[in-house]
Amino acid sequence: MSDKITIAISKGRIFDESIPLLAKINIIPKDDPKKTRRLIIETNQSDIQILVIRATDVPTYVERGAAALGIAGKDVLLEYQGDGFYEPFDLGIAKCQMMLAGLKKANQNSTNPRIATKYANITRDYFANFGQQVEIIKLYGSMELAPILGLADQIVDLVDTGETLKANGLVPLKHIADISSRLIVNKAAMKMKNTTIKSFMEKLSEVIRD
Ligand code: AMP
Image (cartoon, rainbow, N blue to C red; front, top):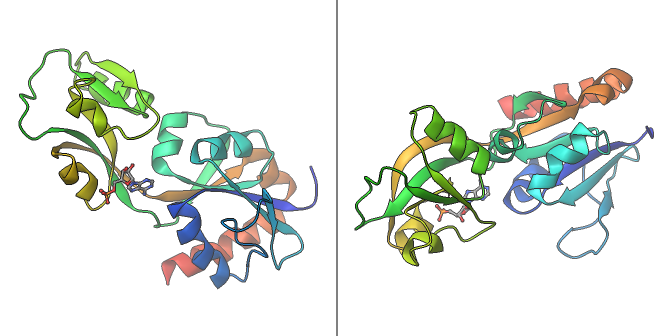
């Protein structure tokens, strides 16, 4: 393991909301990931670097120790179902809800509904709790299209303002989980880089409480 601490951060909204938090503890990226083609971004702290990667890859990098730390949505962590990292605290950013949604005008009472989602594990577990059989249709984006085109009866997706559902004639049906971004820490790194990681975590938890 190198002496540098690598923080893997999900692209997009989570990255945008993580940067002000990191700035509060004086970790400032030297490049803007939207402007550079570099995949590893150095920071003003010579021992801390940042990876900006696909949300679903963050737990893999951290579980396998390629990154000591990660920032990922609870949706991704629930779906990943790994236990190779610690999840010490909620960063309280990129908040939204995971919802079951369907077409406003549709009959929602099918006995074996087809559910389109990128969250196959979460969806399976959610319905298994009610003993309900569902057919899961795995998609990688734009889930809202599936009920409109008859590919699925309902969807499981993240909802923030509800505008995307509304614009596509869908309504929320059931709340599945509250989602926000979490810090995750590789288990071996927590032991081997204990001083640096502990100090990082202490500073971060202080600015979150503010
Ligand atoms: P909204 O129209 O504000 O309800 O946002 C819904 C769209 O944004 C859907 O495509 C969601 O997948 C996506 N979305 C909402 N919140 C988040 C989040 N915290 N992280 C990632 N995607 C999100």
